Length: 360
Image (cartoon, rainbow, N blue to C red; front, top):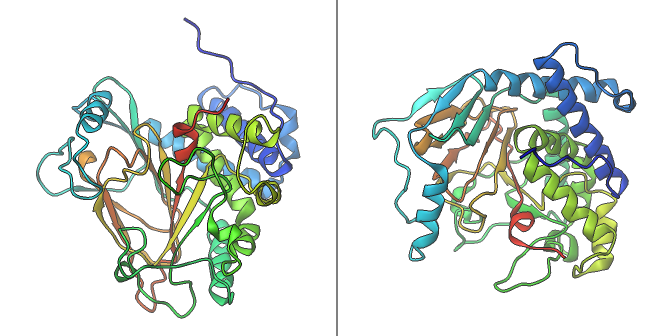
């Protein structure tokens, strides 16, 4: 059976249209890397040269990863089925169904892709995928958020691995805590219709200013997903198209319409953690087959990210991108937030609503 054809045209607001063009360029640039005679469509010439250089760097790192395959001895689908059968497990407390070698995780430096025993892609490690100018842009956005009297970042004294204040280090230049930016998320049990996050609907949290500062960067991150997990990327476009064209419902429509003018990514949520350390956990709020994107920014070269099932520990340096399904694989990270090492943020780009909500 031939694979389904990818749609070329979507009805989307301008920022998502721009991100779709970035993704198209990345797809063709990757094919050109495989076959030099391949031609990139002329409409990609509308992309600014500076952005094209950033996208080409991402494509090159992904290409290098495809030439460094790490073969895993287990079956991803069987692991998901095992986890779904055991409803007694709780986030961060369950045993890992996919044990590694049992020894210390090996430091992994080079770009690589992980395949299960059936040759299914289960993860990507993409170091130095982002250019320094993009990191500086994100760095500046976080500095501005810290100075904002209505910063959307927050913590909780009794929170979980996301929000517990003991897991964050204070910094004079950056926000304390984490923030969830979402135009269409699910925040309550049995919630049937998605709603924007409180970062945009609460008068005490100015998520709008932060989103305005990072809108172009989100389009770059979206292009990453388009290369490494295109099926999830296009499901994201389908979701936002249906909401944008009012084929389905969403709460707080007034906020959502304004958000779409700024939102430029296929993700339903963008979580940003400032100077944060996450203990080993599985994210059971995610979906089993949701591949999510983790990005490190800042200036620290002492951060670490560990996935025991991959037998891998990574230097989670600024510009590093790691992609995998966090529902299935235990993982954790450490950010060095000492005075001279600003581990500004771990950016966690998730597609929960895309894979858990069936739009009509």
